[in-house]
Length: 186
Image (tube, rainbow, N blue to C red; front, top):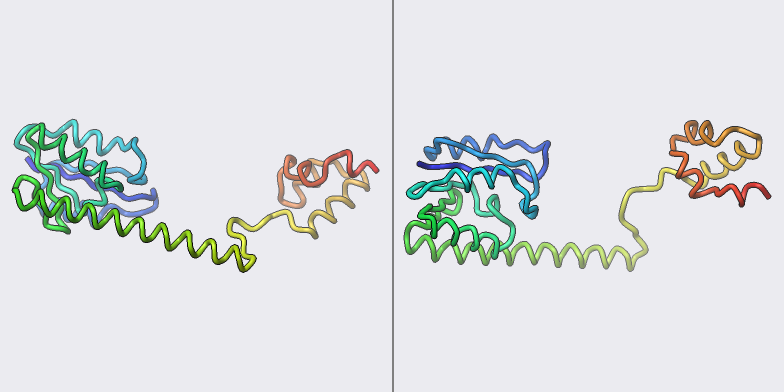
């Protein structure tokens, strides 16, 4: 029996491309996850692996859907092989039930890990270059200097902190973080 496994990293992403391809490949059952491949807790993958019996085949759209690290992929394939279960990747045309498929699996897995490492290095280099130019990433602050001045004036006029925070669109803890009571009492 062919058992499909499909995964996307974000909950708002769509699985249809993968599930359609798995159905065309003849999968009788398809398990899915909507979470990062880097996470160890993927219930759909755990169910697919537990469901597979000797003589079955796990089918994925691409190898990176199964795992992000080469070691995880190799461990999974070794476990499947030990249990007499094959692995097929539709995009890479890999079938680990054949000797050539095993070789190609290891080559593609190494290349995929190499590509991920290159992306990580380029991203880090870009962030470092941006920092050197004075750019700081992250979410913009919601409590701007203008809002701080307005909050200070409202507090000095006797407006309760909860009302000040509400009118400025911030939380009370944020208000206290930026304007501790000891500073404003003076």
